[in-house]
Image 1 (cartoon, rainbow, N blue to C red):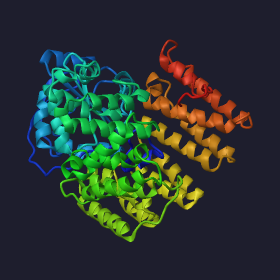
Image 2: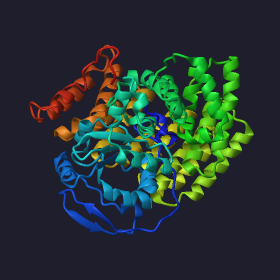
Image 3: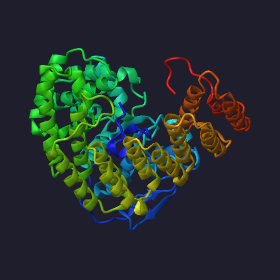
Image 4: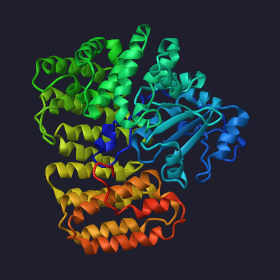
Length: 545
């Protein structure tokens, strides 16, 4: 149920981001006790609040010393998996990790930082089954996974869920088993709340397979005790959102529709579940109503009214309010053909412009701007204000943490205008400016994919781009794990489709030989060698690239 926020370019280019919590008020810094990667206690005081926690950064893919230290100290492990360029990751850094209560609470666990571009990170990601940036997991001292923390709730809710996890004697997996096994009535309210605020979008088949997620959440909503009505409501919303993304159906649509209307009409319930409404509202409507039906005509204004309250809610962060307005735009476009850009009401356009201007002014830290500005630019683009979106991004490029991310916004805007040359130019620039082995591989794959989409006849340019991506592959197992592997496989499958019946056989032969030379240098028995060899192999029908 991974929902990519607007700040993640709507998954058009880069899958695997999720949204981040609200910004807290500024707090004073406090020196904290930290643990080095070797497990030795050190003290640290920093000038940057986001650095007030000295994260443990594992040496390569060796995580064993961290859990050995956790077992010795009887402390849980908090694992953060992110990337420098990822907007929601930067929002987390600018908000949650700078909170004084988080800094103080970090003394209760061992904080581990995995950046996707550091040595060993992709292999560790495969070990822990983490894909999207950011993913945050809480482990027991013995290494058992307790829960995955939601990145889309506000900061106060995040701290509540973290506290529940630290105090829990049961893992989310154990609670899920108990709830589905008929023992839900004996579970504590805290256990149910952890289930409701589990990061289902970052589960990656840890609890349930992807195709089982929606029905599982619906079963949980039904099994939830009547006394836990707020929890049951959230589980139902999660089920509806997951069903919409899976293009499935609910077992009892009328009952779900009635409950959703009650949630939307109740300001406190809508606020409690704002993250689901702003990120999945457009996914929910088709599950609950057919286009043009009386149910849709009643549900759309109810959803829009709730989103309007959230868009003007000063207790929400600027980022969350941008998401609320984006959700309103998505509702307008819901029943139009894919890619269509219906004319928006002038009042909505004015709201978009006003909120974007507020976001530009309010976001002061570099971390926060990396999160908010691409999101604001995307909102402008979704509203049809492409020139204003371009202007916002171009003004930000010189000061952005990772300007190559912003360049993909410009590429998307150019493509929306039908300017293929500019779209390809910005995508190429983004790849050339990208930094880090995993990031460069992902951005290179995006560039090749866009060439295949927009200029499939330009075999020379496609070959040059793909060959350049392969030329950067290091012949080490790390290169062929997790996101790296998926980026390569996706690029490989697109090239195979482009080759079709062999019309590009000469190009594919050269690229295959280039990749084979890399594969041959990998350890014979390592699964990375198998992954490498499979990049240019056709997949069976129905399997995912």
